[in-house]
Length: 148
Length: 179
Image (cartoon, rainbow over all chains, first blue to last red; front, side):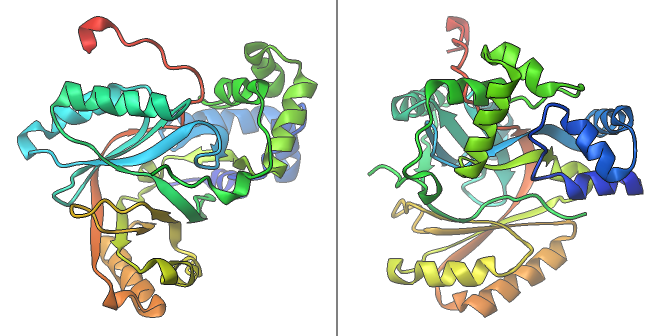
C-alpha cells in the first residue's frame, strides 16, 4: 500500500517517543508543519486502511503479568477451526500460521502465571490439541518499529 | 521452570494504578486533542497523573516504546520469517549480539527449550517484502554469527489470524456455552 510523503514522515518519525504532553498531536503537528486537525485526519485515515493498528505502548515482555509464545501442531483440515478457538481467547494477542509441522503460533498474556495456565488449559480442552509453551528467558532485541 | 524476568524491569515497581493505566491504553490512545485526559477518565486519574505515570514507565523501560504501532502486513511486509537455533547456553549471548547487529532483524530472543519436540533456544524474526530477500538476509545472519554449525529451522508465516496489543485488563468471563 502506498503512503503519501506526509504519511511516511508521520509513520517514520513517531513509532517511538510519542510526546507525553497534554496535546501530543499538536506537538507532532508542529514538528511536521501542519495543523493538529490534519495529523488526526491522517492517523484516522491510516487506521481506516488497516495500516495503523493503534497509537499505543509496547510493554517489555514479562514485566507485568505472565506471557508466553505457544506453538501447536494441527492437522491442515482442522487448522481454521483450532485457530478460531485460539483467537477467541482474550489473552491471545498474536496468532499466526507458520510453514512447519508446528504450524500454529501465538502469544498469550495473562495477569499472572495461574491465569496463563488457565488460558492454555482451556485452549487444550476446547481444541483437543496439546500446546507447546516456549516462555521467554531473555530479550536481546525487541520491536522498535521500522523505517518505511 | 518459570521464565526468567526480563532484565529491563528489575528494581522498578509498578503499582495497581500503573496496571489500570496500561489497561486503559491497551486498545490505543484516542485520536482527539486531549487523549491523555480521556484515558484518565477510563483509568480514574487526572491528565497530569496519566502523563507522570507514562513518563515514569517509559524511563523505567516498562514501556519499551510509545507511538504508532503498525500492521506490517498492510504495508507489504508479508515475508515474515522466524528462524530458530539450538545454541549452547554458554555461547548464546555472543551469538545473539552478532545477530542483532543486523538492522533488518526485528526481534531476537532466548526462550526455553522443549526437548525432544522443540530443542531450539534462540529466535530471530525478520520482516521483509520479498521472501527471496529475507532468505538472503537469513543466510547473511548465519554467516556473520557462525550459526551454520547449529541445528536450525526457518518458519515463514503464511496467514495471520489475529494481531493486536497485549491485554492488561482483567479478561471478560467466557460464556459457558463457549467452553
